Length: 313
Image (cartoon, rainbow, N blue to C red; front, side, top):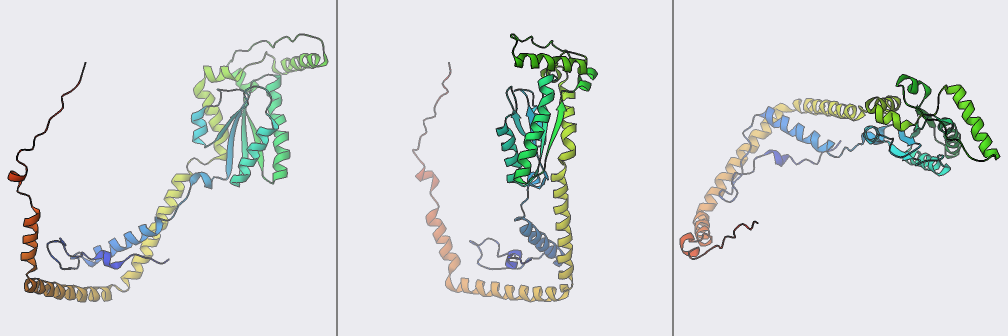
């Protein structure tokens, strides 16, 4: 590593340039001088070190929902997750393709966490999405996973969530018959009528959020930023110790050179003072200041200020 730090920065270039055109070396101890130099050098090196904890995450997270308003934004922000509510109906092939494309651009694994009603349609959604994403992800060469977070039968039982009878369709076509058959099979399996995920979110918001959070947590390191900060801090400390150790080897020579520089600066200051006196520079500067300084009493006499009054109703 090369430093562009100018060592002259560590000398106190004369105090009060306008009053004294001279130079002096710092009277700080050599140890204080070395500490300051090392600290500033390492800080300057690491000022250019940029990293993003989000970019360092191995997985790209998305939260999908069958309907609007059931994805907790606070939880999504914790995991920097993309929210994709379907707004009703089936999750489209377009949604699946967009999710895979996002993961591919970020060069990360894709993890989709799904939320849907506990009903015949909601139970089919994870399987349908998994097949679509599996095919697209394979074509795009990325690894993808679909996780069904809820609503599950176990959650309905544990929280005693309210259910609603399935709608009775009109007509007698094949679609209607299939729907009725699907509904009967679901009720036989579930032992209850369908339950909407909205009820879980509304009745148990804290538990609802925690279930989603627990599902995502194994795939996203929320402490990564702190870990990266600690690693950088340790590296800076190690580098400082190495530089300081190297400087200590030449400390005696540095002190000698520093004393020589100090002596030369003192000689330079003396020569500057003598030259200033020879040129009458101090008198010229005083005359210059007098010309610039206003006669406050005379120059400001007669100035009036019209102070505005408050305008209120």
